[in-house]
Amino acid sequence: MPDAAEPNPGPASMGTWLTVPAMRANLRAQARLVVQLVRWVAMGAVVGVLAGVSSAAFLEALRWATDTRLANGWLVWLLPAGGLAVGLVYHYLGGRSGGGNSLIIEEIHDPVAWVPRRLAPLVFGGTIVTHILGGSAGREGTAIQMSGSLTDAMSRLVRLNREDRRLMLIAAISGGFGAVFGVPIAGCVFGLEVQAIGRVRYEALAPALAASLVGDLVVRGLGVDHALQPHLDVELTAALAAKVAVAGLAFGLASLAFVALTHAVKHTSARYLRWPPLRPLVGGLAVLGLMGLAGTRDYLGLSLPLAAGATAGGAGIVAAAFAWKIVFTAVTVGTGFPGGEVTPLFVIGATLGVTMGRLLDVPIPLMAAIGFVAVFAGATNTPLACTIMGVELFGGDGVALFAIGCVVAYIFSSHRGIYTTQR
Image (cartoon, rainbow, N blue to C red; front, side):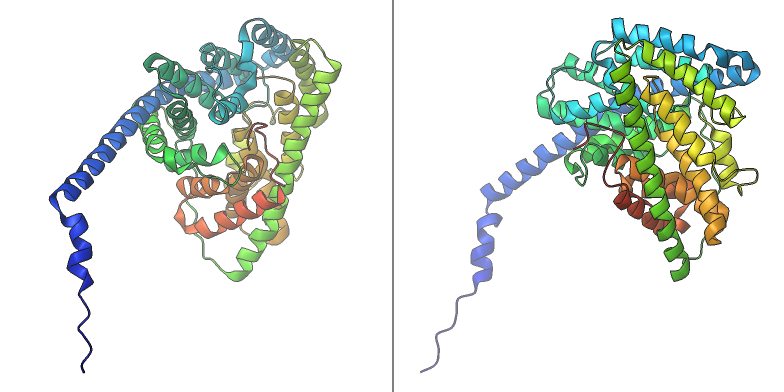
């Protein structure tokens, strides 16, 4: 007797979602998703405007401060007095503002209190004082803190809930980073990646991308230019990849040394200088002493000419340049001067890249570019963002080498980072 024909499951199973009620439910769900997406993109764009305008103003002020210091060499001798002034302002008026970037990250993890609105003007003014007097600090911390302070004020105004506020603070980090460095895609990924080691917060992708893109567009639209980096022409080989991996080990150890020394300076100054305003005063004196020992002022301020010289071929870059920049910056930031660590990390990586290029017989501009982003990756635990940053700054030909350098540096930095509230 022939077997009975098996029923065709296709139409019966498909009918459950092809019915009119099911299709309407699916359409309603998609419509809600579109509304949510538009909402998050719009809010991220507002964050981008806040980040872009504040970053543009800051970059122009920073350019003025650097030019003024270079034209008036005597200003560096006021660094201890400037440190005392900044310390007094933060101590008596700052409240929680002294937490810096770690405060922003902590509020993402545990949003228990609003980011102080006073943080934006305090970090803006304090960073300008740091740079006009020669402190070795960066600029990303200022951009991120201003963006976070302004964004949280907006969240407070529109009464966002805890989870929405978390996502807006991630967008603020992305917007500030993308705007101040002109790297919108890396800025987006940095905000998603930096708040937790090994975890990327994809739920914040839409507002983070909108904030970073808009922030960068606003800065460029206001006529503020970023330094152009050389485009690298790279041919990937197994031997070159192996050499970059070896250099990545050195970059990771350099980032570890920077983090360890910065934290050691913070803990030591807090232990022996119980009154906080004294810490940047003593730090300013120490920086002046270091300047005398080094016999040069190259390590004051951002030290961008060192990074530019490294990626241009390394002429005149001494082997110890990266070590000097580590010490200058650890003392400046560790004793409480506001600013940031990222730009000094770029300089540390680029100058160490010159040394590694010479030792490993690799084109110096290439190794300097890899070091530029790899030391930063190790110190912030953000290898994905730093790989993308390498592509945005130096071109896509070296993407595999940027990835190798950043990942190896990240591994050998032992997951210790400059942001103490990173989890």
